[in-house]
Amino acid sequence: MADRARLGVLISGRGSNMAALLYASRAADCPFALALVASNDPDAAGLTLAAAEGIATFALSHRGMARADFDARIDAALREAGVTHVALAGYMRLLSPEFVERWAGRMVNIHPSLLPAYKGLHTHERALAAGDSHGGCSVHLVTAELDDGPVLGQTPVAILPGDTAETLAARVLIAEHQLYPRILADWVRAGQPADDPLSRVRELSLALPEAREKLSHGAPGFFVEGGKFFAYFSADHHGNGITAVLVRTSGVEEQAMLIERDPALYYRPPYLGPSGWIGVRLDTGDTDWAHVGEWLARSWRLAAPKRLTRLMDVADAF
Ligand code: GRF
Image 1: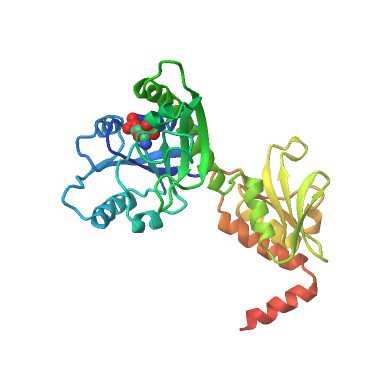
Image 2 (image 1 turned 90 degrees about the horizontal axis):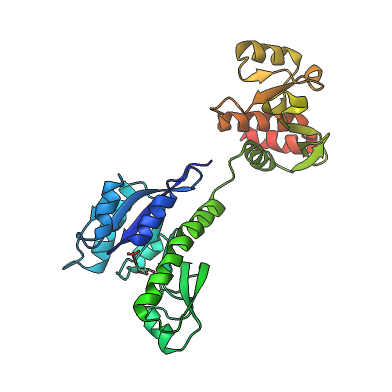
């Protein structure tokens, strides 16, 4: 799994959504971890829970502070904690434009209505007064306008006869606790570069000039348009249990030298070995992707048609 996103959660009170995020993050495959829980109310109950669960907390009363100054302090605390994504969870403060701008695209909120209906406060009262069949909750990206950013996910909650704002809010809250961690996880995952070895080899390979991909004997192969193959991704080829990328070397002498120098990293692949190709293992547990990138670039050069390498040689001369 890619490094987990480091979530900063901003709360003002109870913090039950923060708790839902916190316990969701305990799952081994959850793509986020809580790096900081911050509050504008030092007495917020959620802070006590977060601290008891070993999460760093930050509390600062906003009273008597200009909004932008207060937000700058929160921002500094988030940065210091290495936060990558922010989740608002019952954070009862309007945010300064600077803060929204600073976290644009990386900050979400949960709101207890089916947006765009009922932005702002008293959402349940308003849904009941309107005679709606459903209330619900929404997770949305935070933009400068209150409760207005693109909606990432929603759960409708049926309104029952005799519901009051309190009874409806209690059921919507159950839905919130399910929705928020799931949408956050999907959102974080969608923004993460895939980090399985094939995806990374593909990304590095296809970044090279005029590189294309094509299956070759069932293995993903990468070639230069109008030229030859420069890499093959090899996963458990004929049950050998090895994950590797095969690249060109200058010939069998270099190949032999590399294998002698680092037999844990390099091997002579069947079929292509006699032509001077080498296998660079991607299953050693500490793959140096910059090094793999260098190999791919070098192999690309050996496979590219003259018209491309000539241009590059000219560029290199400067
Ligand atoms: C939730 O209903 C949330 O939708 C709204 O504020 C409430 C916060 O509750 N933004 P909690 O602090 O997460 O328990």
